[in-house]
Image (cartoon, rainbow, N blue to C red):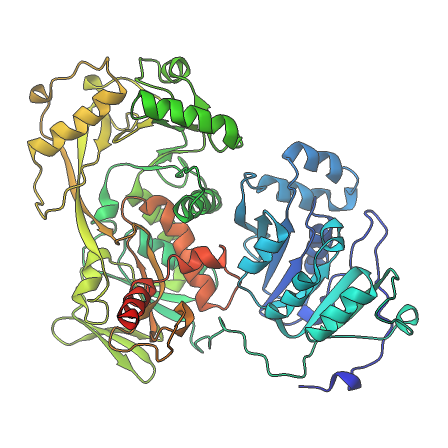
Length: 625
């Protein structure tokens, strides 16, 4: 580490490009050149003028990094209309501004990951309180842009926290610097160059200027989330359903080579094999982690699907909207009161009264409900096909091959069949094969349960003609290929055959939503499909490095980061009945972890998905006895 006192003395007065927008910090071109990836944190994204200037500089630089991660704090997000009005003032960035508006997120709290510039620029917008968002970032920042209204009122502790994100020699450019801020940043390990205006500062000085600093602390730094990236970017993915296909797509997008192994002769033959799956977020009054995660997953899935070519184009389905009808009159009244207080964006969720729901559907609906205009249904198999097609020649597939043994070697892992033949070897193995993962000794202790789900197929002439998806305790999709899908049962048994009892229950649930539907279950043929969901005790997926069940942390009060792991073995498991929306975000989270990239969700939400969470709870319980 270089001695901060020996850093080259340069003029660190902030360079600002006054045209066409004020307060644009000169992008760190000299820092990012010839790097594979580079990460920037912008404390005041606003309408994106700093981002657009950085994007333009990246485009103009022949030695630009292959991937540019740009994290922007957005405590007060602008609407699309407001963006248009502000972007008019920046004609030199008109094309880039239009591309930004095309992916502008739904304005709900949380982290929003967006891909631009043919997937080379990854923008993560963080909507919410800046203090809370900064606490939730998992990233190694190489350049900080500290500007805008927010940092002017930040408490000193917030500036001090930046060193937890800083990569070695990270550059920090700050507007509106004063003596107090400089002192806090210096104590945090940022070394400022002397400037004329900063020559004689003291603790009580109250000057306003700008400065540039380098993160070069006198102490040893250790980024807790970093790990060694394999020299060979090659992964084996086991399972060709939604989880496995998404893993292949997100890894090959980053240049990885992927070997996909599937025991069936075709893709999507297990839980991903239904004729139609619905996609929608989950709402809760307290905006609990499940709601926040499903919201992030739902919105990111839309973004990924659009990048693949869109619903109804690249794969079968329809963004026809989903109407979630209240269970009963009490639930209806409660939800309507909450809707008036929640003030959710209409393009995300909107409460409709019973007359409005009936008018929307075209027939009598039992109660009012939530209208998700962006929801709909998808044919999962066709989506899997689209994701695997996007992998191109970086993907190698093996179908009709059952995994018998997974062996750790000095170079990674070997996968063998029941005859002992090595099918593939790689530094990384990802288990995306649902309940089949428990057949492998390394994953056999994971707390996963198979839940039977029977979907009923009803001919179009036997069901109401509806446009949106209807759901409550069950769901009914619009007609596709002459058939509606109703579902799904939630049975704790392993019966693989269709049964009349489950079909009658599916029909009864829909009749509660559509009381005028005159249907006699005895006159309908027994038709549908049985699948088995892979479910964890808390109904959340298991995403990330798998724990070592034979080892335990030696710390008295361990954290998730302290739990021993099976090096190179990862899971994408436990998607339950929401595989459509879980798959893209789960695969993105895992790919970011493997590449030491910024995480696409808040740290506490990523922790809620960590496969070691159950083992950690068990260890804590045992220690408390």
